Length: 297
Length: 293
Image 1 (cartoon, rainbow over the protein chains, first blue to last red):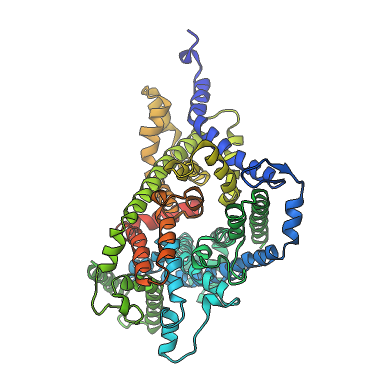
Image 2: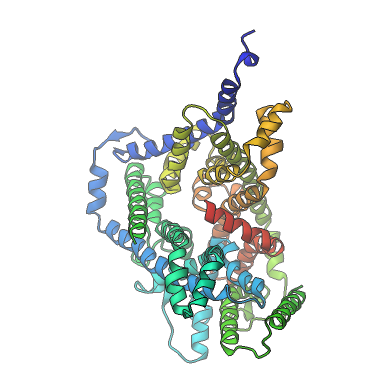
């Protein structure tokens, strides 16, 4: 019998390995790689989901780059990132750095900061949307009214709507960053601090010369992770502007919402695919640039 | 329970103070603690307001009070009598559970194979899987939608969950953890006559349970709150997941914020309860997944 039994141990391992990998190889080919190439191909075609597909070269991209709405959306997407990543990282680091030194009710305080991370984004979007309503409904404006400060437009203002949507995104993600920062701080060997203490170095120098440099891997991870999150923002915007998606006047529209609209409201599949290729490129470039810059430092 | 916790931690504080020998309280430390605590209270305030509003009568919701004057469960009764919330809750639970089981199983299988078997093409497969981490879901939703339409998967549970059945992140995480399992253990089991599937399942898997639970928490939470794909692939309310259902429900209610807050609370409270019960494990899992992944 030339069966499994006649194989050498090494050959048996190969058989087992492909046995373990058979289904996953199919999955990654069909559900990940094939659609990726599908999206790229589709971006050079025109298709309304019903009729036939027609090749139209780079027309989708030309149309996209000539569209002022796209540039507005592109700017918005980066605004979420530029506001979001530095501020949320700075705040979460300050919290983590101090919380690490606190023993009394440490677990409880940590839980308070982490709790928003465990919520559903959609639920929180509606909660904050309520906060932002004008008097007599919204919580924030009611608070302002209680201390006789004029109304604040929040989601109705083309300038303030984006930060209003951005705020709950930062709020919900803060706890995760605090936890990761604290784990990073904990992982720094105590000997460094002891040596510094023996040398009589002050807390600021310790922070600048020991804690921050040794936290670099954690910081790199959080910068890339949170940047990708902000560039892909969608749930919050979609739910907080259901009456005028991405409004007012596209002031809050991020790239993913534009993709969703183009594909599933206008059914302009090729054009939407071109937008997804742009999103992919943006994510790739931003991550690589960030890794580059931070590796050099 | 909270009081016990305070007592317990103040007990350790006293011990600490006693052991280090200082009796006076450092004002800097008190300020630090107070600011941190107040910051934490501010962080949970939105959630508190959501729950408090869900317990208020419509005429009271515009008041700033946190504790309702006449608390009522009417909003909950109204929202639950609708019936759809049960369905959405069930859909979300089913989908999140099924994808979690599948992802944990397959990701650890792949991670194990890539770590413990030597075969030609191992590196290629690993890099290929890892490279899919760079592809954003949003790029895939259009081809997935077309695929689901062609296979008749639109408006089905399977349609919602098929893209998440395996994760590259989990594969990477599990591979990292299987590196810590000594080959001698596996060799010993091989000599005992176990086949490779048995070795993976009954020798290697029990040694990486912390990583398995970390991965499970991440996958479950990710699928429980997933929004864009379930929104695209379903259009009949009976198949909505909780987030998609909540969106529709909230749009319908438009200005009845006490009902919207009740829906939001219903979507949020289960995960909050799970977190409060398993806090320690969840935080450890998140850290593990975050740092190793």
